[in-house]
Length: 231
Image (cartoon, rainbow, N blue to C red):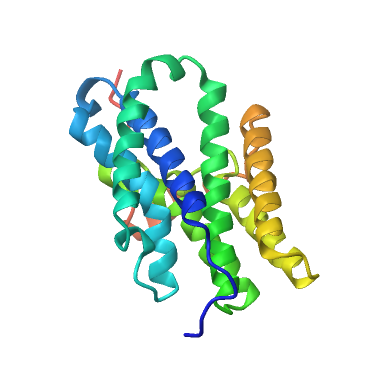
């Protein structure tokens, strides 16, 4: 693969890793009961959120993950996770802060993924796909590790759609001659705004309704029907 047109500054990549680590740790710290985690578990989730997007981005690009070529990525993710644990008690009571932080993290990973794909000469549509995967990848890995339903597969608040919109803006703006770094910054803002507005006004894609579920189940015998207990 040819040399990229530009490279993502280390400080910017580390900023995304750090914010992701803080957000992931605060998310994991909020669980109680049987799903509660110890410090190691919270740190692992924070590290996964902080580094997951970059890992997925570089694997899709066929590159050695940048997060494994520099000591500072893992150090930053670990330190940010510890910070997230310390701040969890404060920020868990400030839901808006967590929502905004989550939106910015999604925007940054999406923008970095799309920008790096364009820099390596990836066509526009695959570049958007890579950016969207990088944006939501950390969350998918988090849900898998914690045994939770994968967030982007269920009715939510435009989680992946917001990332795809920001990534699409970057591709379109770049096609019209806007410098990729500038387009990436605006793309982050676009993603964050869409995500925050979607959460604030409870906007989501239309839900897939049950289409004659009981009829199909009865005819095929594939889907078990659980009858309510007799009164």
